[in-house]
Length: 378
Image 1 (cartoon, rainbow, N blue to C red):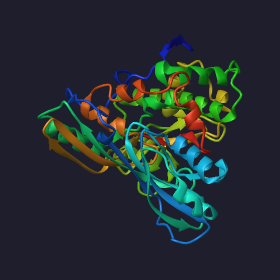
Image 2: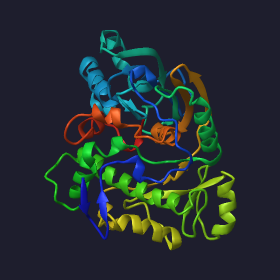
Image 3: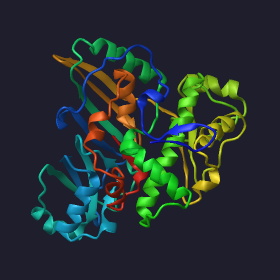
């Protein structure tokens, strides 16, 4: 999907090759997701559960289902209201994933009746509050890359670079839909031209535009050599404490950025997320103008700030006969494919998007289950 939205011609079709990259070299190549077991995701909770309270927590393993689909089945089979199901994050269907869900404990007696092919309840516990969107520390990924025999050393070298210097915190292509349909319809929503009325679907679609603008601004930072630095006007964030502050002395704060203590944040435009100013604001305005938009267009969204880079933890590479296995942990909301793209230097999500539904890709699933779609991780 290509159109003239501002001064530039913008493609809304997600393409890794169009986004700046952090690491150098040709990449390992290889194939992802030949089998669901090749891509494993384990949710890391934000806090320990107390073991008692009015909310029943379910540790669920699923294969071949979106989180929203599992939630719908829980509601139907247990008689739970959609709004009473707690979810911390959304997980991909093209993988084996484990995550926690919560339901009111009064439904526990019906749990033995729940059945869904490809879904297992591994354990249960209780807690004092409903699980909320974003109530996770991050996700552990274990990913097998096939058709890359002998490439484990190269993969390990790139992963070391990313652990030390960070990985671009791009939104992955699941946000944008096949052919950019989600972002295209999101632009229509922002301009008042869409016939869609479901507010949750509209929020999801406009979030894809937020994500496209964020990716464009982040790519500019990489292309201009300021990924590991900060600019005057940036709102930087401390990795250790989460504190956010305005960058006034870019030279001094860039020393801290180079050491991995802080990173710039990008704007997910909305009424509570003020645009950046000075040099950082000029860069972000350039990215936004390419879509023919102003910050005021996002008045229906709250907005937020997002790290421009994240640091993989507990990372390692294990050689296999036909390639390697990459394992790493990322903070919540980050996409494993941002890491894999750097290692493989290929279109790492093609197979997953091939299997996506027609039309507005994932919009109905992502809008369902009472989940805020801003916490998607794959």
